[in-house]
Length: 324
Image 1 (cartoon, one colour):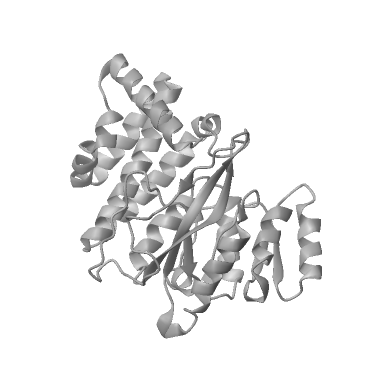
Image 2: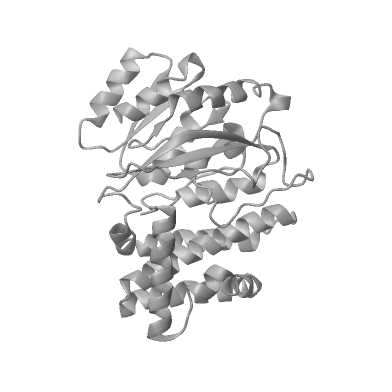
């Protein structure tokens, strides 16, 4: 946490830091209070009962007073040089009439034991350093490999407050909701090609660790259902936004399917079947679209041989992109 907080404080007086102690049982509460005492007016602390990652984000959102908000997990950090450059962009857009709803920047996989660092960049999918919108005529088209995470986005805080964003308690993988739902409220966005967020992965206790994803597959499936429900009931008219969100649902379905296939038990294969049936019943048209995408086809190859091919394909993609 010290590394995370120090990187946030490197932004200087323009940065408000909210530390959420989500019922921690180690020395986090005491350390957080030390920061608040050392940096009065710049650091605030929320001490609360454990509610999970989503509840911590919600509490921080409604405690903050800043124009823009960036979520930083306690084991990650911000690149200081990139942070200063991003802050310069944000400071140019502080006036109400000039504010941007969403700023997208890059994140870097800082993987345990690996020197090679893969960077998730969005060049080619968005124009750089230009305020655009879903309906301004600018081309917005993310490649399948350009997955937008919570680590990618900085939101205008009031936009999230106005839409009444509240993330589920005691649930993993809600960062997907944080990316997905607000995008329908984004009118102005900008891509800043800076490697800002350092995403530390590879620890055995992380939620994105494959073994933990198998254990928590029900939570991922529940989040996927929330996203399916939201999209089915709030389909955007704008084709670029529709394509972005449909691709996001496609990726969520792929993750649920691939984790179920990797586990390979009868129970897990039933869970895979369940999420596809849920999509089919909830939104037959969307089911038909996603079932015939590359990901949809590759995750639903028939029979034992088909399942082995699906897992092999997943392993290849895992090595290529370096995720957990």
